Each structure stands twice: as C-alpha cells, then as structure tokens.
Image (cartoon, rainbow, N blue to C red):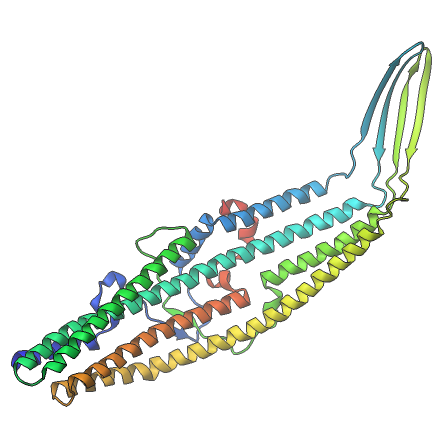
Amino acid sequence: MFLSRVLCTCVCVCMTLPAWAVISPDNQLASLSISTNTARKVDLTLQSFVKSVWKESPTVQGAQAAVEAARSRAKGATQPLHNPTLELEAERTDINTATIGLSQTFDWSDKQEALTLIADQEVQATMAELVVTRQRVAIEVLNTLVRYFTAREIQALALRRSQLMKGFIGTVKQRRAAGDMNALDVTLAQVAYSEALMAQAANESELAEAEADLQAVTGLDRSRWPQLPMELASPPTGVDPTLLESLPDLAMLRSRMEIAKARIKLAKREGNIDPTIGIKAGREDTESLVGLSIEIPLFIRNNYKASVQAASHDAVAEEQAYRDAYRRSNARLSGALGRYKNTTRAWRAWVTTGQKAHQEQMGLLKQMWQAGELNATDFLIQAKQNLDTQVAASVLMGEVWQSAITWFEASGQVEHWLGLKNSPLLKDSGEQR
C-alpha cells in the first residue's frame, strides 16, 4: 500500500506541472500577457527573421523587380516622345540628284505630360503593391508560426497525457495486487493509455505538418524557430478612421484610379494632331535644292473617340473597385477589432480566474484520489477534463495571436508592429536583393 501511495503521488504531481515540464527546456513555450502599454518593445529576433524571409521570398523579389521596372518606365517617360528623322537620297540618271533631309514630329498636344503622369502613378501603384506583398508574406509567416507553436504546445500536452496514463496503469496494477481495485479498472487504465498514445501520434503528425508548412512558407530550414513575443498590446477601444487611408491595398487602388484618369487625358490628346516639319537640301546637277515640308495627319478613319470612351469606362471601373475595397476594408477593420477584443477578453478571464480554478481542481482531484474517494473511472474522467481544459487554453492562446495578426493586417500595421518602416525600405531597393 505504501508503494501504491508513492506511485499515486508521483502521478498526481506530474499532473500539476505545466505542459513544458515533460519536455526539454529548449522547447519551453512563452506565455502570453495582454499589456495596456501600447509602446511595445520590438522583438529584434522576429524582425530579423521576417526580413530574412522577405529576402528569400520570390514573391517579394518579384514585386521589388516590378517597382524597378516602373521606375525605369517613369524615367523613360520624361524623354521626348518623338525623335528626329534623317533622310538621305541619291539618284543617278541623266540628271544626278543628291539630297539630305531632316524632319521632326512635334508633340503639339503634350502627350508626354500624360504619359509621365501615368508612369509616375504606376511607380506609386507598384510600390504600394510591394508593401501589400511584404505584408501578405509576413502575415502568412506569423500565422504559420502561431499554428506551429500551438501544435507544439498541444503535442506537449499529449505527451504529458501519455506519461500520466502510463503511470496510472502502474498505480492501478499495484492497487489491484493489494485488492483495492478489480480487473475492470486495470483494463480501463490500459485502454486509456492506448487512447493517449493514439492522440499523441496524431498530435505529433500535426506538429510535423505545421513545421513543414513553416518551411514551405519561409523557404528556410531551421532546427529552432523564433519565439512569438510574450506580450501583446491591448486592442484599441475603437477604430481610427485614418487607418483606412494608410492601407497599402487602398493606396494601390487609388494609384490605379489616377492611372485610369491619366489614360483618359492621353486618349483625348491622341486625337490631336502632331505635325511633322522637315527641311531638305541638296543638288541637282549644278543647281542647289532647298525644300520645306509639313505633314499633318488626318483623323478620318480613326478619330480616337472610342479610345476616350473606353478609357472613361475603365476609370469608372477603377473607382467602383476602390469604393468596394474601401467598404470591405472598413468592415474587415471593425470585424478584426471585435474578434481581437473578444479573444483577449476570454484570455484575460482564463489568466485571472480559469488558471487558478484549474489548479484547485487538480489539488482536489489529487486529495480525493489519495483518499480513495474516487474510483478509476471517475479519476480518468476528471483527469481527461483537466487536460482538455489545458488544450482549450492553448488553442485560445493561438486564437488570441491569430486575432491580433488579423487586426495588424486589417489595419495595415504589420510592419509597424515588427518595427519596420515602409518608406525607407521601399526606396532602398538594394536591401531587397
């Protein structure tokens, strides 16, 4: 009986330990606290990790290349629209003739100004798209990190459950030998242990899958991944309307609207004439030749009105796309904030009251088991409920992180939260290479 009590005490003590007590210190997970301090210290390790992911990301590098291409087109748009034409002519017959001519088409309606405006707006659009791409990659990485660490925590709990059930079998067998339990209790303990092993295998598979997804998303292969910060700022009390104006998605659509408007101006100017003036000089036998020519296109077969109408419709389509995106972004911002508030409220309730009640439950369960007031079935039910509660708490912590990341995405604050600035990094194309 003494040995039975010792084994029982060891098993129950194991149940009162945190999930990471049964794994190595290197795998210990960070806890999470919700702070009212909005001035959060930047996690330099996570910041460096995200920057390294950007550096290896083909999507980000492709977006950066698009920016450089748009800048080159903008530079080209500042050049004159038409080059001069040199003409040389020689004719040898009864009368020998040789002439040289120079002609120049003039941008009479200043099409270059419209093309320059289009090119400049394309630069702004591609820069905004680069920010969108970087944010999308960072969000995917952060969400995958959350999934990985949540799976690791649950796997640790599954390992703890297996060890608990393994110790429980030994305790039940000892009590069975002492005549305190029947054969059904031993069988029940063995079935519970088998179930725990199956759950552990499933959770290990989920952890392996989460790590594989992390490798696929980041393009990196690491033995250790950066920890998530231990602190999150409390969600704001309300939505700041100015956040919508700074969203890179909307900035990109605004640039596209300006591009569409500039194309209307260009289409109208393409319907205006660009005259070509040329001069020619030469000799015809002994006589000198001097000529002046003017070419004026006649817009008879194509007056470009259809192009103007098409450009106008394109501008309307871009404006409607922006209005729809603005409305959806506004709704997404409110929804993300509501979810962030709900999950943090639930997490605070668990930290302030749930954890303490959970520990008290384990203490009472331990006392009742040692006192013989619980049979094997009741003990297993209570132990399973306790572990399920811890799993639910781990899942809730993951949901808090996911809601925070969704809020960062909806409000366009991902790079700000990581301690990165948009503008300098966009201007410094070398950092992305």
